[in-house]
Amino acid sequence: MRLTEGLLQLAARARKPGNQIYVEHLLGEGRGYPLWVPQANANLSKEYRRRGVSIGDVGFFTPSGEFDFLFNICLPVDDPVNPGPDSLPDGFEPLTPALNWQKQVREYTDDLHYLASSSVSAQRTDAS
Image (cartoon, rainbow, N blue to C red; front, side):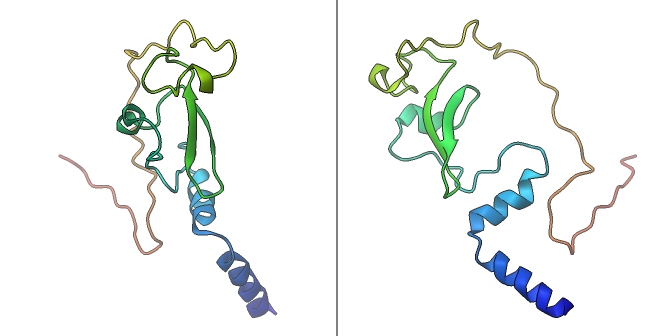
């Protein structure tokens, strides 16, 4: 009976698309939403593709695992990253006051968590 249950679970998992399995495994780590396709859409402006996903970007996640960028709420209408006034919400005004881009953020240093196959293990060593 257990073998049958295991096979049914394996068959159900095999029907899931790769991007869904990827998200399910990484989302629980609590470090943001994992993008299956991290590259920017080639149809977006050169400025956006060069900069990539940033704070203030508004968009949605596609079923195929991409972030579909619409506009950036922190940038002015005429910023080259934004798609232009005709593609922004009516009455759009950037978030003010602007976010403090110079604010220092503590670097993530938690070395107790890692992502690896089950055959890999972590070992601490004394640096002295």
